[in-house]
Structures are given as structure tokens and as C-alpha cells.
Image 1 (cartoon, rainbow, N blue to C red):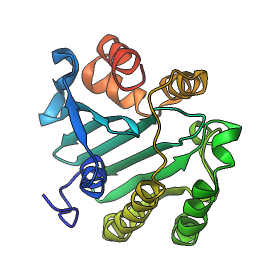
Image 2: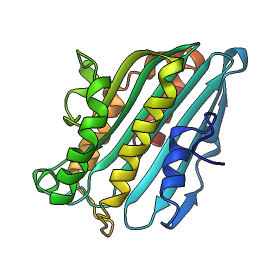
Image 3: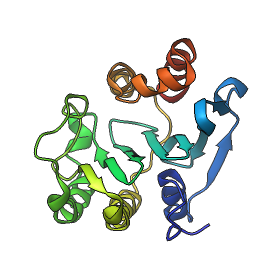
Length: 222
């Protein structure tokens, strides 16, 4: 696997960039690990512990004309560490959404000089891709340096993935490490995404409402 391979999901691109860091796969509930939907659509769910950084969770949905990658790296301690969040949605030849951001959840994390440097470094790369109007689901946490690109062509995907890699590399270079610590800001962030995730409608149609609600609550956003 190399991150130059266009078939590699966005979580796997992040893992490749984290190559120098200890990453341990975490067993997930068999009910969530794989789910088959209509017309050959398959959802897979994975988790890892990333030493010093936090919990990495990934949902990948692949179908004949569909590619969705959702990636969340929840911090060990949101008082000092940000979230890394990303999502790619490709339908046919249209990139419906390409999103990536380094998101501080607390005032203390916002003041980190390393975070400010990372955002200043990535902002010029993301500026030309910024959607003119941000969807409601992303306005609460996204930074001014976020990659938030909507309705692009598949021909632009390679450049979008280059911008994604730059954000992931800036996140890793911050080297903001901490021991695990419960923090209400992280719990509130997860709940926000559970409530507002734009993927709920599609997943409910493809995999069933009951399973989708359980997966979102007990898997990706627990």
C-alpha cells in the first residue's frame, strides 16, 4: 500500500503518514465490522489506538459507483490536543464532499502555538477549494484552514488528496502527545457528529435504520 494509490482510503493515507508512530488495531464488534447493502455495497469499520495521540476510527463504504471514507482521530486529551477529522464522498464521477480539518475542542487547545503553525501552513493549500457556503453540520467546529470542498469532478480528486495529505502531515508534525484523559469536550463533539452526520440518511437506506442508529451510537461516535 502506498498513499499514491488512488484506491487507498483516506484513513489508510493517514496511517501511512503516521508510519513512525505505534498504531495498534482494536477489535470491533462483529456486528459493525462489516455490513453488506444493496447492489454490492459494503461497509467496513475499523479502530486503532495511536500511541500518544488517541483513538482512530474509520468507516469505509464501497460500491459499484460509490466511495465513502470517514476518518476520526479522537484525542487522548482534548485540553491540549485537537481532533483530526476527514471525509471523502465520491458518487460516480462527482466528488460530493472532500473534507479534512485539525479541530481544537477547547480554548486551551486553540491557544497551542503548534496548532496555529499547522493551520497557518495548511490554509493557503485549502483556500482555493473552500466551498462558498458551509453546510450546517460543519459550522460548529471547522477552522479557517479546513479543506471543505463540495461538488468537484473526479479529475480534481488527485489534487484534493494532495491537500488532504498536507493537512494530515501538518497534524502529525505537531507532535502534541498526551496520556488518555476523559474530557467532556470530546464527548460533546462525538454527540454533535452523531446528531448531525450527513451520512445517516444514506446509511439508513442502505443498511437499515435500526442498525445505522446502533452503529453510529455504539461504534463511530460512541
